[in-house]
Image (tube, rainbow, N blue to C red; front, side, top):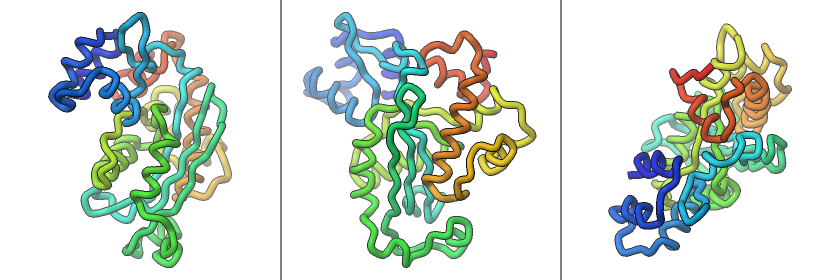
Length: 248
C-alpha cells in the first residue's frame, strides 16, 4: 500500500483519493487522522491547493532536512538482534544543526562485535532500553530524509526495530551514500573507511555510531557538489541515488 501511495503522492492526489488509498490500513479514519498518523511515522506530507503531495517532490534538495544515520547492532539479523548504539547528524539547508547519540541497553554482546566496535556489555549495563531510545529518535527524526552508508541495512534494521517495539512504521524517504558516491565520486572502493581516508573526510573513530554518521555526513555533502544539473528537488536526489538509475 505505501509504495503505491508514495508514487501517487509525488504528483499530488486529492483528499478523497488519499483516503481511498489508505482505507485498507486505516479503515474508518477521517482524512486528518490518517494524515497525522502518516506524518508522525515519517512520511513527508504537505497540503497544497487542496491536494496532498510528498514534500520532497516540491522542495529543492538543498532546502530539505536530512538525518544522517549510523547504527551499531549486536546481530545483523533484525529478528535476532537489536541496536546497541545509534548516532545521527541532522542537516537543514545542508548545514549541521543537531546530533543524536545514545548507547542502548542489551544483555548480550558477542565478542566479535566488541572487537569491531569496542562496545561491551558493561558499557551498556545502565543504558536505556531500545524502546526508550527509539521513542526519542522518532521525534528527532521527524519527517526528514534518512541518509546512511549501506542504507538498505540501516533503514531496514531500524524499521524492523520500530515494529518490534510496537512503535509503528518507518516511512521516511531514504537514500544510500554508497550508490550516491558511485555516481558522483571516482574511487577504487566505496567502503566508508576507505573513502574517509582517500578523501580526507574526518578524523572520527570508525565503527562507532556518531563517528560514522559524521563521516557519512561529510561524504554526503561532498557527493552533492558533483550532482548533474537536472537534479533539482529532494525527490530527484532520492531517485538519482538509487542503484542503476544514473541520470548523469
